[in-house]
Image (cartoon, rainbow, N blue to C red):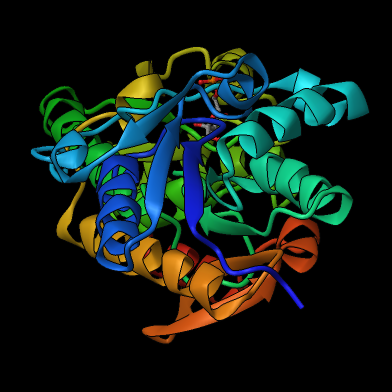
Length: 327
Ligand code: F6P
């Protein structure tokens, strides 16, 4: 029988995502509502190992719901993947009596939590916070909607100048292993081509299509490329196009980390608030080693082990839509 949770720790880990602050706020205030003591762990698992842990109250999370980044800071922490690192982290939680942990992060962060919760008697609940939306067991991850809207805003602006000069633009968006930002932002901005890590890039077919559009005098062409596309990202794609179409007027834009910052959208604030609330409820109900997600607008709980292994799948129908709408 799991012990009653009385003191909880919350941390953000991996790449930051807009909405993480709204989620920390929800965790802290729900915890306090249930008379729990809440601790913030600074810089993810690094803070657990280095004992950088602070008590939090309602005022600690005032005025943050609208802010990007994370007030708890974040880091990727290879030391937590070692038994020695996890032992140090456990001792630091234990000496404060922390008996429940909430981890806001991506699959790498969940992998750490999964091992930790199997080794030690501290239940762990994961909340998916990553702009990449590459975690199974949830329709959305915190930060994705904001990142996509940032990308859309930028690509719309690029379209204006592309149109003025009749130019081809190659726009690289984030997504090392996942093409969701590319797919959603590309469809929403009317991109002609979208290249993603989940599909092999067919450069010959892309070139054929660009030639054909040139003949039809379709001069504005936007190609959205996920950074993890198998061809090597925006610069590589542009290099090959230039070699094969030397006269093409083309520019490359790498959107980069602007996609990670900024004030979270309504959707991200709602997700963050609901998931943060629900993660605390999970600990109180005695759940362990699960990720809180939202599917079909309902809370959904996935064992961390599965959340780590599986990825969301990109449907072929979405790819068909891209093709038909870009003609
Ligand atoms: O996982 C989120 C993400 O933004 C990826 O899309 C991107 O590849 C990576 O993080 C970049 O990480 P860093 O900020 O460490 O360069």
